[in-house]
Amino acid sequence: MIDPKILELINKDIDKAISLSEKDLLQKYINNDPEVNSTYHEMLETENLLDKLPENDPSVSLKQRILNSINYDLYAKKHKVSFVDHVVDLFSVSNRKFATSFAFGLITGFIVLAAIFYSYYSDKSFKEDNVVGTMGISESKIVESIPINLAESNISGQIIVSKSSDKYFLDINIESKNDFSLQINVDPKLINIDNFSLNRPNDFNIEKELGSIKINDSQNSNYSLAFTLKDPAAKNININILSHDNKLYQKEIAF
Image (cartoon, rainbow, N blue to C red; front, side, top):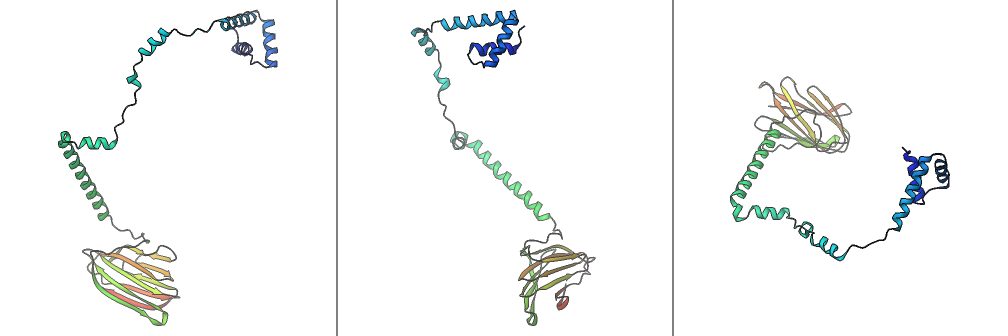
């Protein structure tokens, strides 16, 4: 059996696409191997015979038979039914019963999903580590409003105490042109801090310990604190405003 590489050289020679080096190599095979010699001349003769065959066009009757046998319906452009057409057909008179059931099922599904999401987010407890963003106190009743007026230190503001069914809220607003620190202390055995947030998450430093939150700030800010009473004996929360560790303001909020 002749090596496929030699057959490739023979084909290249017949197609007149062979290089000079490949031509010399092929000639060596032809001169030294009778089988290669015989195969080469057979393929060359076959190619010459094919070149001499006349090119005959098919008869008119053959063309007509071929054309008559084609089913043009197979190649006709099919009309695509759009999604809108499906919807219109769905709610047609003949399908009105099915469409009504389908619409009712969609509405029921939306109601069930809304109830699941509402239940999940309403029951999700606050984490004390959440210290960015803002916290709304809707559906809560204001218990007390405490003004802050430190004229000598150019610090003013307000503390609003609110209460909902099971939580207390402190909304602390401070306006200051100077650096200050806000410190909130609770008894962790009696009071649980559920969430602490502020109206801007940047440009402040916060220190947290068990039962204590201290914020070093220098801008007008609003802080929100949500907490629950672990024990009815819980009495108060202490709020301090300091400047360079000097206590400028102290307020004890009792419940």
